[in-house]
Amino acid sequence: MSKSLRYNGVSNIVSNFSSKYHYTIDNIVFTIPLYNPFQSLYTYNGMIKVKDTLISIDYFKGEKYPLVQPTKIYHSKKKKGKWLYSKKIIPLFKEMINDTLVVYSDTSFDGKLHIKDSIKIVIHNN
Image (tube, rainbow, N blue to C red; front, side, top):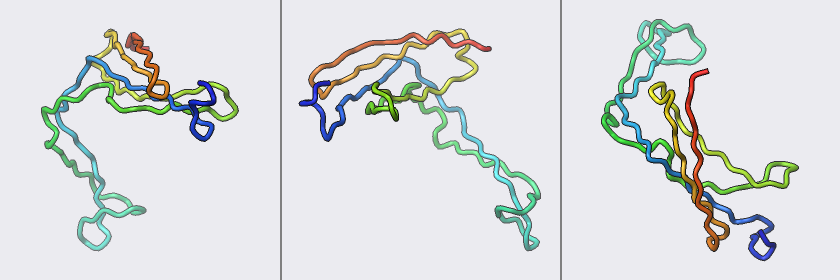
């Protein structure tokens, strides 16, 4: 970007990502260790656990969420690099093996120029 479009020497480049894929949450289960420091079950770091307990959260059950979260990502420079970059984490599930995931992007250069693109990601098991 030209120097006139930079703010404090930083380019204002933002990307939005999306996909047609969604996932539904079945349930969320946490395993929590239990300890017995005074003849009663407490959680405490540093002691030997007595047993585990499972805690299930059903609040999100049946909720549908986009696989690629629709959040803005600001591009920045790597240390000692001249290119701008960003990262986007996408969760993958066993059920997606052999599918092709299409991720769409809309990159804005200081809100004036938009470049829309997409990438196809083939998911396979090593």
